[in-house]
Length: 476
Image (cartoon, rainbow, N blue to C red):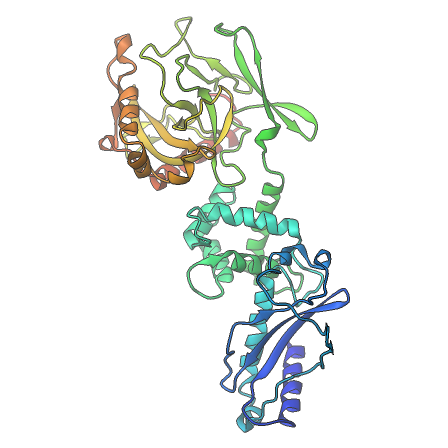
């Protein structure tokens, strides 16, 4: 900063010694890239305010291959220039002259000029370019990953994220923040104090936060450390492409099982679909494990009481169970890494959990096979009461379904698929009656709750699962 102040004073002194009064002064912040210099310029009027937004610079003769990847996307929307253009070298220093007496006598404009320099630097940071530390630009692969992280938070798709969305992103990625941590992090990113963060703000914060120039407070450094964990998680994220299923035993027999394996860097390992598949996908959707395909009635379920928790057909009194009421008109399964705790009574229902992973009901057009793992959008839920236990039914749709882009909440389901939720509710209410059992009930006035409410329910059951497994329990 002292060097910057000295440079500003020198520029002002040179401007004082020459030229007419009242002419704007140019400020330029430059970076050397090979044989060329990338420059960002702005002008400051006598009042200290720039007449227009700064413009980015790059030599017209500079080959695309030598441009940092994170800046290539700007080539078609930003005008570029260089210290060595087609008309020859441009003189260095301050090209505009400025000679207001009070400017030099009091130096009141120096803070404004320094602030403008910092604004230019931040503009560069939003492109992943660190003008302060030339060797600390953000690698292109990090920019791609940052866009992925930002997209997780930007669940509305408007290109901006709020404080609440930032907090939810950390929950989704398994690194929840305290309110103090969240407020501090959001303040550091929200440079304009608008209450919203654009991707450019996000990238500017990341570039600065991961610089070695020591520009963060202790709180900022602590958050940066947490954020690095998120980046590492995404970089080594669970990929369903490496997941495979195998069967053992004879179909329609008591010993039939669907087993799960994961290719971990060339090594095929057996995994648990309940414990080892993450609840959230790297892009912010929720993973659903399909147990019962739509238009079928064999009652398959994750065997929570067996090692590695394979999928098996449910058994009662030594016989395989089927839904005698009829085929399901939806795909049925569960969310991994969740558990409805039987020792916890849900205040909104008045009943304890059913000792299983939370159930998922997928309403897309495709039939999902038993054992498939699908990225889904959560839309809402029904609070079913089965044998005096809370048995949540989460309504969702495959992220790849043609209707997925139009469905964001359970109200959208009623708008585009009128009557679907009612049919679902009645199926769950009546399916046991053909076996002489009473109808199931529904809490919350039988209302289908919206996405926000449902996400809180899912997070609660995810917490119960963490408590269960932290105690070393893999079966129940």
